[in-house]
Length: 190
Image (cartoon, rainbow, N blue to C red; front, top):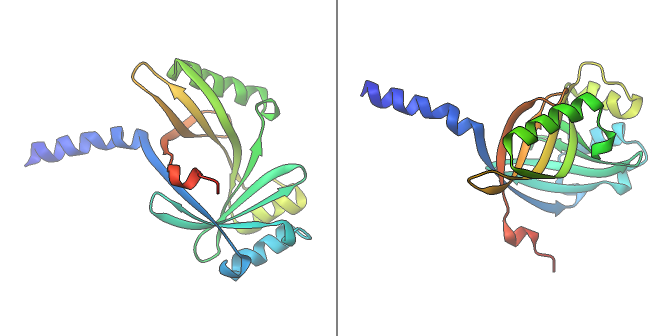
């Protein structure tokens, strides 16, 4: 029994290295969103309430609301839990907008772990207290925020080719990755 337990525990780190991400997103109306989330968006993104698109999202068994809006020429995605509490803000960026040190660390990670890779999307992810996140938007203040990079990419190794989503710290150092499972029925446009 003890050896079985040791064997099971030894697999935990392997399983946590690369998990799967299955995501479904459905467009919804603002009256389907918790009022707390709407109020936060109205305070942070003043005068843009008519431009906000709301989504209900299921990601690997957990549920959330997501607001998408263009702000100061960047696409913002703001995630809330089912009670309307803000979880994070993600802002889409281009490779050439990243700091040189961040790009160097990311490049080193991709080149040392994949034979071939292609970055599909880069998002800077901000997490923190709801007031600090609001200050990021309406005052461009970064105090007390955790900054990470969420990157979706195609990666080819000796064994396989997959689409991944990886998380990196504020310096571009690897934290974790998970395989993106595409649900073809969600990608059809009618």
